[in-house]
Image (tube, rainbow, N blue to C red):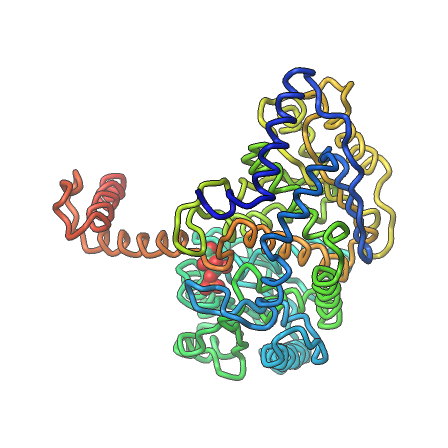
Length: 528
Ligand code: F6P
């Protein structure tokens, strides 16, 4: 049995869970002695009372956080220890939003981040003056995928009220050419800037879209050569400046993405350049300031008032002791409609793992499936299941009380969010008898500062869960394996070396080759 499952806090939680399950079965209701769980920091207020935790469960969860030494791991992360062991890298996204005098955080990383932000500011200024493309830039197209797309895309949508009127920022991520094609509709080519964002500069989707963008420029300016066009209309954000430069992007237009920043944690880095174009560099700094405020709260608030830790604690209870295998996130805000997508990558790419950091198979559940969409649309889709389905599905309701300009949220929207939460937990409602757990996160105003706090809150929650589950939350070996396999299959299909019918077991050098060949044959048959 793993050390985690043998730990006193885990054993205690196990006993409490069995006791509660039998009471619930007997009485067909949840235990009555649920405690209020509320905490706030800055413009965020968490009410997790809908989780219906009893005091002994809450105490055992506090003990678990202490036993698993989450605070020590946080210090190790901030000080630059290589806690991403498999890739032997430090994990320093918090340094991207730190200030020089923040002594808890790696000072070298802080200086690099500050220098990069000065370059971002200069480049934006040059672009707006027409010094990059010859015409003031009006359209920015972010070409990237995963962490090189989700964060800035989410923030541009969420900060609708802060968007600069003269700047039109768009995104293209998918390998399907239709994505870039749509992003290019109606833009003025002379005033268009592409930002190719890729930490590796090897990602198939991003390279394909960058080449398509280059071809499109060539069609728009047939008398100019493609090298001139790339040098004029492209910026790169990458950790692989050689490949960016071999694509033709001049060094002064290549911004860094360091190996100490994971893609899904990179919004705060130059990977957020498209967002900085959209809301201005000062707005971008406000986002960072919000995230920094959450970093400070995470490090200093006591566990029982610490928002990321409280969210992690209730998740652990629901996943490991109440056996919830999915988790819905429902923002009652059209502007936050992309949040579930961003969270999917953050949570599932970080903690969707069955191997612990020591390479052993885990004997407990890890990341649930994260899903969701904006309320009230969601009410007319899957809320029936939340209310009366057989699965235990914890819900995070996220409710901004005002938009970025301070305009109060629609009263009916607020009423609907509160009604849904009440119905989920009320013992007299026609639901699963009040046994569907939920948390409510109120945001005073959806501005850049509070958005920064919200996103950093979830980053730290995911980190804390990873520590408790003894996972390396910062690699993604499964995704990398899929990328390699796709390349091998593509090569197999291109060379035509694979016969329909696939290969017999053992025909290839190893199982991987056999799988590659069989899959390639399948694709080839489908194409023929
Ligand atoms: O989705 C897998 C992934 O490796 C993510 O971790 C990353 O955010 C994304 O691909 C893009 O990678 P890159 O920034 O190197 O293009």
